[in-house]
Image (tube, rainbow, N blue to C red; front, side):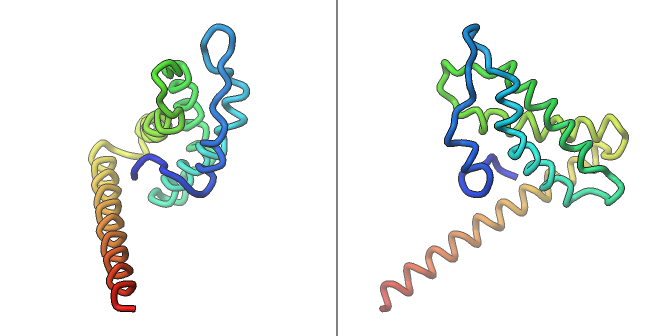
Length: 141
């Protein structure tokens, strides 16, 4: 699973940068309101790979913890996109929470990561092939 690029709910979130308070830290209340759909989308993607008895709200809760941790570490002076910065922490916090509950073992987590990377690779290859097919069709026309 790669960090968000564009499209879907992610595109709506990236248009507005998180609000920074007078102390240079992110406004956590505004951050939670603004990035909840982002956290929910990450939790939904992870939920698809897990057993049905795991509650979606638990995943969102772990993700929100990760979002707040990312907010503590984020420094807007570096110019990094907050959503990209927070993506890995949110996803990691969800997996950390699952491991803490005993739902996902280390080896199971490694299998999930392998499947995510394989899926991303195959999507990349398919997109390249579709792009080259479209180029060939436009040349033939």
